[in-house]
Image 1: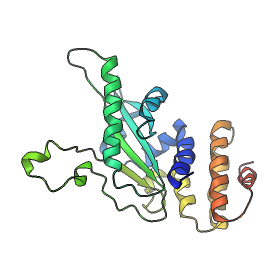
Image 2 (image 1 turned 90 degrees about the vertical axis):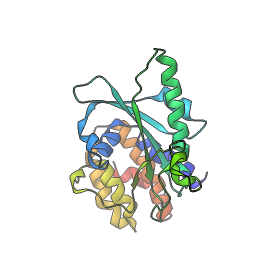
Image 3 (image 1 turned 45 degrees about the horizontal axis):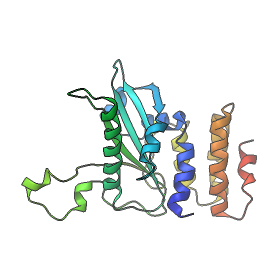
Length: 233
């Protein structure tokens, strides 16, 4: 299994839970529109994920605007290694998503929701690759630029970006960032204990964290993966 495949497995498992995606939206997407979302309506779109599997394997969520009936879609991609072509890959994902939505909305003038690509990155080095698909093309005349893809991804660089104060200490994505920045297991114990407290009574969320922490511990010292279960017990 490659690093990126492992990242997709671990992070995708965590972000298959609405609580993680809500905490991401609440604390880490520093976009004006994020404050206008009705997070109680957040739902995962597994059918769309199957459609995208052959291109990217993105996790797909949608959420309504406050007081409205229209949706915003989120396309979450997971990386452990820098991917210079990520914006174009997400352009392909978004195109497939829109194709599926168009098939279900055969009206003469369909109204499509915006789909926002978000990269969740956990590499050891700070992400430096472009997040705009236009940057992948040779220098273009201004008159040609409008014909090139302009998909731009948002990113959470979990190990390097400052954690926004607005996220708060009880934000599970904040705790994920704290783990990714920990140099030793001892450094990570406070974050693990807080995760244990916040996931108490949520068996599915706790299982996802236990599996993730087992991999995280195994990467840092030769401890059995079951050690994570002890922390979250």
